[in-house]
Length: 414
Image (cartoon, rainbow, N blue to C red; front, side, top):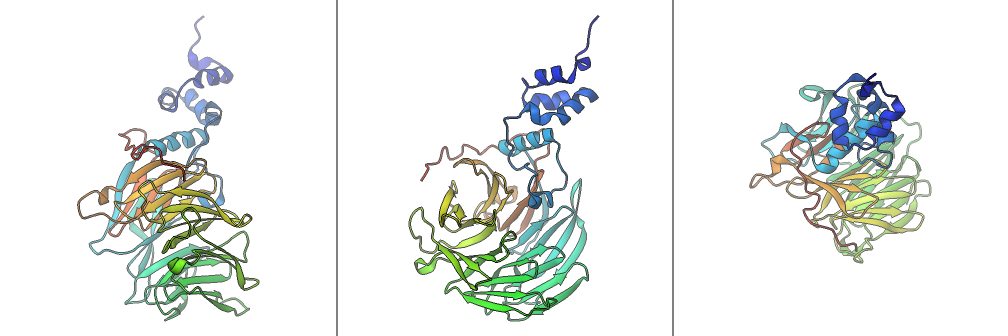
């Protein structure tokens, strides 16, 4: 009696499948329903020693912006595509006018600011439908949006004329619109629960409660230097991180305790000593005691409040300014740099970068642009340059890899 392979027990099939790589397993999944079910269900056991990048859908922050939840095998397959540079690129939007845009990704929406307008586009399993605009918010008539943040049911935006406004997605109305709130561009904003924070080129950080809060509160801090970024800790509600321009050998990362209304710590870039003008352009909390930053010194830095110093530094392979980054709170960071539409994938468990991606819209002569903002889920990477909104789809099954993992060779550990 001759037995077919698909009639074997699951245990025996797993022992056989463990000798195959991901590419062979993908082909095997297509042969019959039984193989597909076994590989989908037990994919993590087939590659139990592999910890995937990007597709770690563990932290609520990444789950809340994921278009779909991947199976254990799909996590390995799609993660392999990220590492190899295997993706399909598509341009979502184009503008003849050059802007400094910003974006934020959610499970069902993609929020994009260009000029004085913030729009939300509907997401689906097929991607983004640019004709399906769910929200359109217009701020000051004569001032562009510098930075915005979407949290809960609110959009908080800072404008180039120093105005600050808060918009409700429930009521479709402005909660407030504060003209000349700052004396210069509002470079960064954040909101957490009932606290609103803004940082400006006028050297001030301003903290206030939402208007609907019963307890009125307002506080301002003079940083004696341009404020580029602010970030509220969602775990320790009292802590505020501030990134400044670093001129005159000032510290570039400041931790402010809002309960005590005093500074908790000041940090300097400590790899090459005090770097003049090493401003911090983006900040994100990993936990209540750990903070990531990036900026003009070309490094992603991990600051630990318990030790009071930079515990990890990931240097851009081309020594370029790092404008923005996103972190999955496990081991994956993606950073956007200042030229050629270049994005870098990092694994926090190693010092060298994993892969680089170049936006096709920036490859032509005279079209080089910074990546002003980016976001991603397990399948897609969204980026915005001065004229384009691009999406890279890593869920593909075939294509030609764009592999730049060894473009600069091994980096020297500083």
